[in-house]
Length: 275
Image: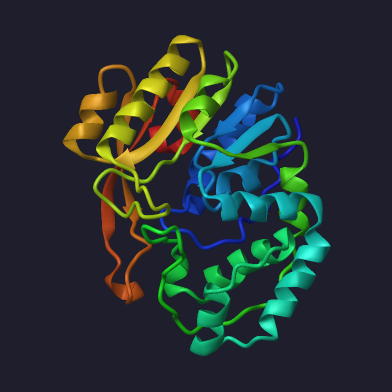
């Protein structure tokens, strides 16, 4: 049995799941080692996908800029690193940040590099857009370090990337596929897109996952520990409470632990979280 890729996701991301690779990653890898399909409809920082490096994968998100970034990483990591170095010559002060934030390059490669630039210099790496779809996260002083995208590129080889709503993606998951769903949490930050992620979307997600469950898919879900989430999942999934460190706060020392859950229809996939 080969070891998982264990590449690093390169973006800071609100609710990123780097911590989960330690607890869930080995169990996921063992399950997928026979070639089963992996489906991740809320790709975000791609921490789990990068860790697994699974080639029979469908990786999606509704944020076009994010998917373009991963497509460029997958196809041409060296040129993406060059494009980021071009943006780095603008500087890392507030004026440069605002200039890049207002920039809308026609070239896909530079749009992808812009994602990394903004991610490193925006407040806590947030990705947030206003009702017009424009990135509007304020500046926070940081640095743009020289990056290699090679390891992440290798992890994404063979994966299908697409900018799609979660429902059709979950709908095409094969029987036996592992669906790893990490949506915007109920009652927490959800402004990644102009539309947000409403309670109706939470209900749509639960229905899509239920239908996948009835087709024989394996389901693992993260979300808040709220009455709505318990109502949507506790009758048909095993719901395990967990503490997650909040990643959004101006002062890192003030970041508390959020009451959240991991839910699944196969407790063996929870690895050490099920202990």
